[in-house]
Length: 194
Image (cartoon, rainbow, N blue to C red; front, top):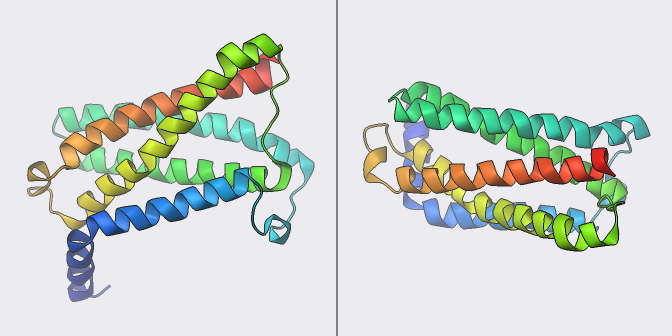
């Protein structure tokens, strides 16, 4: 790509980081809630074999565990001053998250959310609170992750420490870790315990 175009894009993103974060967040949450509430053109999605749809939760659990590893390794890398490794791991985490979300939304659009099959008291006092915290953290993470990535894209490595990137990045990484971990607990309760 032309270097002047890339510089123009970086300047554009730098000047509109907040607006772009809000726009990406609204679009992402609209897709998520549309799929979960089954509002939208789910019938327009191509159907997949039941074996593939049944495998998606298991694939997503592996993606979540991998993402936990890339977040932890990325945090360690930046603490050790290895910026290049940190960048690669955090971009990898975002790709993993995007893949997870695409698979989740595809399955939920076609099948709807998975029902909890365990005892009612466990659902009320254990499963639903864990699920609620997981969902809340996932929602909070979305704008934080976009914001941190947009800052990283639009600022040089030497400029980043003077931005909100380090503080927002720590918050995003911590919340993302807890959300992925709780998602794994939800998966275990849905697909292994009951």
